[in-house]
Length: 372
Image 1: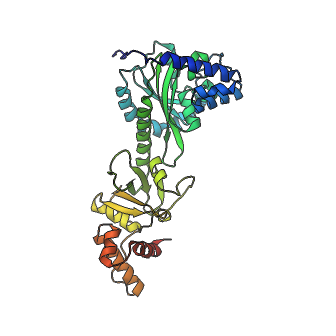
Image 2 (image 1 turned 135 degrees about the horizontal axis):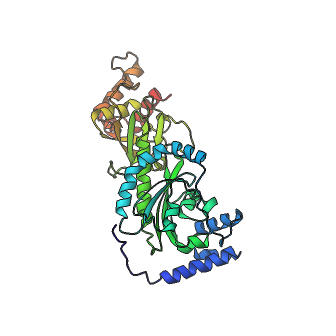
Image 3 (image 1 turned 90 degrees about the horizontal axis):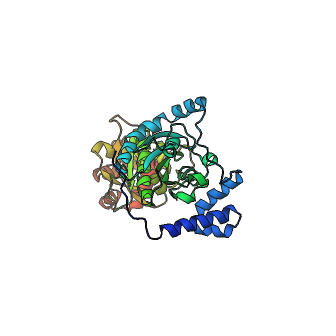
């Protein structure tokens, strides 16, 4: 096994560890004013541990969940483990020379998979990397795993910032993993023992946690995938918002980036695309049939996104173009707008210019025709 790379400790490492120890001692003794020496989320975690009746000098208990609980846990998280496995393997290769290893937990902090250079002869490494070990904040106090799950943010936790004294050998970076519904489904962690500080690992763990979340979204049943980004940003990277639609236009999944771009998705169980996009659905499906063409999508908030529409399967959808043989005046007008937008390959501004009307009028006419 490759030996971990070593480098001189930063000049301020000793002073930082002393400051952490001072803050920890003061806060745990009730002197809350000293908590400013550590990150607020660390102090909050220490406080939660104290409120649960945990004692910092007590030995941490790295317990396995019961066999019956384990069966349910592994069944419930089989899809997460399967989807994340190739990404965990790549992450394990990325950190193989650093002494860090990879832990994946479910949303409750129970270990469901591991990877990387784990030294099983070191009991401290072996205890926390057993499948089924409960690493929640309620069981093992302040760790990157429990804290990231509670705070719902990426964290870097170094040695004495842990709650229990006997866990001060660990350094870890952790990031939550979000599923297609926007809920946290697990947590990705990089941990090493007696290691120097490597807070840059927060970027790596956040990146891979995001890729796992994206893979979960892409695995969701859908007919159409929209890759979203702001105008001026290239589409086709991990930075895209991902949003899945079924054949009827209902949103079946979205990654956190899409939820940040498109308002109205947070906390809503079932959303139709016409509730967030001011564009007829048939144009999205038509764009996918033309082959991943970038198009302009207006939001009802007034903002504009660029999108790449990718069909999951090449099957007919309920959203076909309006019939060009319509007889009513309004139908003929709408048909002309449809045709102009289609000829402009989804570029509403170009279609509006060709028709001699405003872009807002195009949006309004099409929305009034197709909006439920």
